Length: 121
Image (tube, rainbow, N blue to C red; front, top):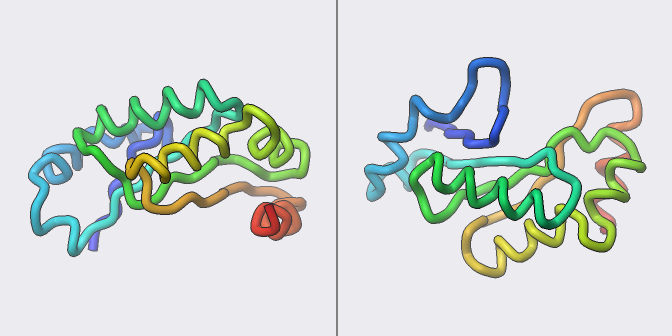
């Protein structure tokens, strides 16, 4: 199984470009591989733009997982899940069939507590 990530910046040097040909092939690869992307945006408009840019970069019409990246404290969670927050764009993407599931990532001493709160929301 291969996981393909297409977030704008997954890690230094990780652009999502190398696996693009495999993603674009379609067909059987979806049974074996997962395609994910993410956004560090906190507002709906920016997140929606990044979701669509990732789909274009990966040359696909759908990702299996979209992650709201770097949500490590309640302040970041409030921004992402509040009115006009990134979560609204993620839910729209799910509703439109562009995304299969939504997750939250983050690091730091408050991340675990923050992610438990994210599950409640």
